[in-house]
Length: 292
Image (cartoon, rainbow, N blue to C red; front, side, top):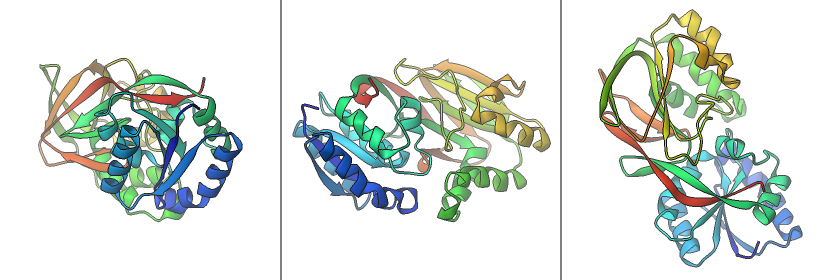
């Protein structure tokens, strides 16, 4: 690593996990000879300002957090030429790290900061807010809302808990869409615009999605019985759910979506928009450190 690192830690990520492993991360970076300074974030606005200052100073911005903070800072990093993002897993899901091949253990993850290589990274955008992974709505809106209110002790199981609770009260929704200007519709569970393939703590919703192809994989889940949905849900952890006849995967750069009732759009576990809305991809928006 020939650049200084600004290590941004969200102390509440992962129910306090990020704060607990921060000393280990700092020790590992020192042992690897990485020059760094640490800042503990107060909220997303504070994190964005810290990331902006770091990028403008020529530093690598490294997040020790969950996916929410990563999505929060990429929007400002993309505005600074030459900005580089590093990721240390400190949340519950850590899906961005998982897709990039970064270890869920903090010491080998720090080795990527020291010795990894830079690669292009696309980002998604909803109503001026950026995300890296998957922006979804419909059934996912209810599941995310429930998961965010669930006890932290559930860990990664919080996403399964949210899905099961949401399923009990779900009624099908109608989604009217335009993908790169072409109209289509779906009646059923959810719509997801996937810049990355993974969300929900390891669910491979769009197993063929790529972080640097300049496209979104759009996953539509149409109506089928709740019993069938429940039986198919575990298959998402291997990505084999896409073989189900109710699952359709399309690809494009820009998706407009509206629904027959209001839905909140979630990405990285955080609300980032409301319907009707447009979700787009920004190709090669910045650089990210990944395993060599």
